[in-house]
Length: 562
Image (cartoon, rainbow, N blue to C red; front, top):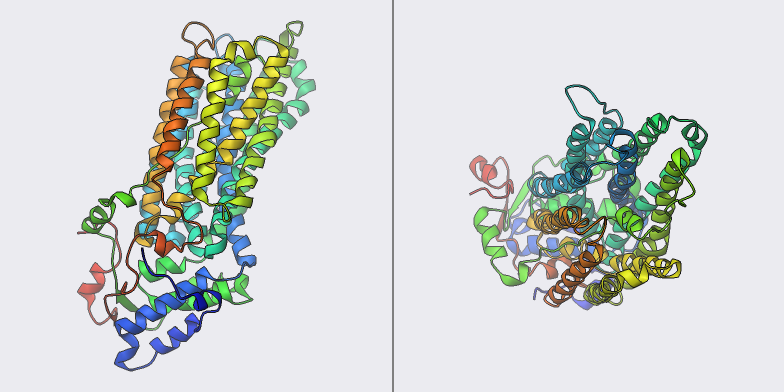
């Protein structure tokens, strides 16, 4: 267990981090000694960990949250758009199983790549230099999908699969960056709520995707009803609008991401510039004019950069750190295909009396309404319930409760599937239970899973480790999606759904058991959660970059360097 600041300091630090900067500017040997540098580092961390909640924290949550909002919109919009694509480009107005699977799996596969790549890059080059490029990928991919065309030399489904993969890389890059940055800027007492508030935007993204789909469907109703039932030309307009509008929130947030300051923890522990980090904390977080100052911190540089000797990211250090059992955390959640579930139980399906183009309209409208119900009744309330309790109750109890409840709900839904879906009242009960699974997913692992890895590793590995943890879970999501697509129709259309729900119950149980080995992060600093000694974190005197060029070349903090 690492040491934490004295209780008196935790309420009112005895010295401002900027005082440490001034002391570092003295022309005496003691200013650059290990003792002075470690004291300055502790004072700087204390200012971050004990800072009052301010507009700057709100700004960071909004900038990071837009990414999760866009991620969720893009992911859930395709579950609705794939039905539209089937009407236009599918045989018999349905995509084949492989076509539907390819479109839906391409994004999570790309997400795995993005999580690993951007997580590593953010630890190598910094959070600020990388933040924003993942959003550019999502914006470009949204445009690419909306403008994709069919031709003799290119099948539109294949083109969409490529663009969905590119979008997935951008989405994957957003996960580690949009979680690590708020974690490193947050004070200890509100860190759980900040990370939860960022992740809660996923529910709003799904709701918006369903709402936009509903509005587009209603707006195109007159034109759609006048379409040739064999062509359905206006459905082609509808899915392009639905997907293309996903770039709007990303385009709005791009400027703010490019101008967000570097986190002081990265500046201090990876770049090893304690002087700069102390000044940044004072200007960005603790001063009343933090919002304006944030735009200029990274544009300034010291006349002489004074770096310190501290643990750096190398292959040997990486293996040493993660060879310790308590530092291995790699988990993420599984998901279900909501549209398939809704269609399987017949909830919201058009009446048998409705035929032709009117049936197409009713089906698209009902799918949108069904997704809105699930978001409003389950996902959004679950996330904000977590927000209320996570810094008081803790991360582990919430995640454990979520997994236990999901296990119970999936067992009920799986083993009682046929009885529940046999009658109208039963189907409504099934939808209610499915809403509860969404609620306890977000009042549980879907919220806490971005909190645990965001606060469980040292700064030099935090983004990389988050990417590995997220990618590990996303591989599970890919396996889940592929398995769902391949198994769902065994024995007949949607005949295997109850057994898939039973399988999910088993995985939720394993998640509950794995939660027991996690370390609770409530009211602990990131340094305490890192499982590293903090008393003598800085190992030697500060040195100028011009003093030792060879040392400087080795001390840039490039992860996995020898």
